[in-house]
Each structure stands twice: as structure tokens, then as C-alpha cells.
Length: 230
Image (cartoon, rainbow, N blue to C red; front, side, top):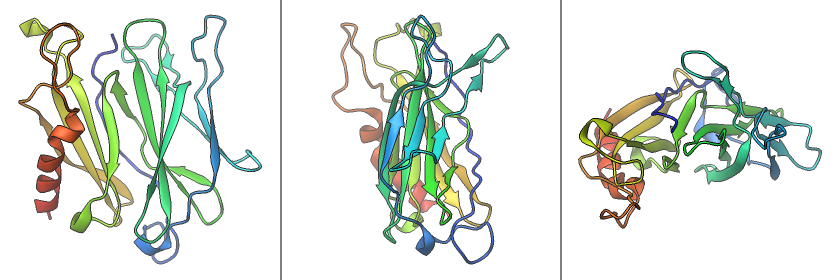
């Protein structure tokens, strides 16, 4: 199984007009039609390059999911499998797209990397989320932040497998929940909340399973705490 991965968010973007390099919520572009493409595979069906998201109709403007070094050396993760996307509308009529793709090398675990993509006025793609990855059964979503921000929150939940206390792989686990909010003054999404739940979620190995996912179960707490922060 791929073990829990540290989630770090640094963003590089220059949005619209106004102060150079600083996002303005009223200057975002509509997200064009696009297609996602699986990465290249080796003879065993494992990825050797990242999945791509390409703008239509020309399909020459693309974003390729970057690889990630395996901790401790010995190769890299190529996120070429199961590309998927979720377009998120912004208040001004523009949109960003959360793009995800997965690495798996034949074991029971997998690792999924995320990119938050925006389209510039020059029709280039910018990724707002380097090095954001979750182990299998992790969840990520963009939520409207309400009064806390005109830009969406990125919220993730990742199972914490407590092997020291005898938890099995497929039983319910506590979750590490993290939320980031965009800071237009620094051009970065910054971590504004991180905690481990007391409630366990999931479970399909014969032990009691929860009926809701962690992002659903923790939504009220996340939004309350994020909204309360300056």
C-alpha cells in the first residue's frame, strides 16, 4: 500500500489585469471544452508518463500531470491512469477545473495527484496545485467558501491507517482533513486548517461502516472553522 503522503500547496498564477501576478476575482476566464487522455503505458499496463488535459478543438494546449519522486529514491510515480476532471464555476462566470490522475504499479494501493487548472487570457493552462496527492480512498473537492473567499476552498480527506492499534487495511479509519484558501496577495493557496477526525469513516471488511463519506461528515466543521479565520 502507498503510505500517507504530505500535502503541500504552492501556487503560481497570474490572473487577469490589475496588479501584475495577483488574482482578481472579476477577471477569470470561462474554462473551454477539453478532453482528458491517459498517459503512456509500459508492456505491463503501468503508467510511464502523466495523463493530460487538452483544450478543444486543437488539442495542442495541454497540461500533463507531473511525476513525483518516490520517497527515499528508487524511481518515480507517473500519474497516468484514470484521468478525471471536475469543473468549478466562479462567481464572475469564469471557471477552474480540478484535474486528477492516478499511479498504480500493481499493488493493492494507489496514489492520486491533483491539479487545479485555470485558463489565462492568452489561452494557456496554469496549475495552481503542485505536489497534492492522496492515497487510495482519499477524497478531494472544491467548495464554495461563501464570505470567507470569492475563490473555492480545496478540501481533502485521507485515511489514517493506525497499524499500531491493529487496524486492517479495509476497515473504517480516522481521516486527516485539510483545507486551503487562496491568498491573492501572495498568489498561493495556503493551508488554513488541518486536523485528524475522531470519527472513523469507510470500512468494508466486515466491521461496521459509516454511511457518509468524510467530506460530507466533516463539511460543517470545516466551513465553520475556515469562515471563522481572518
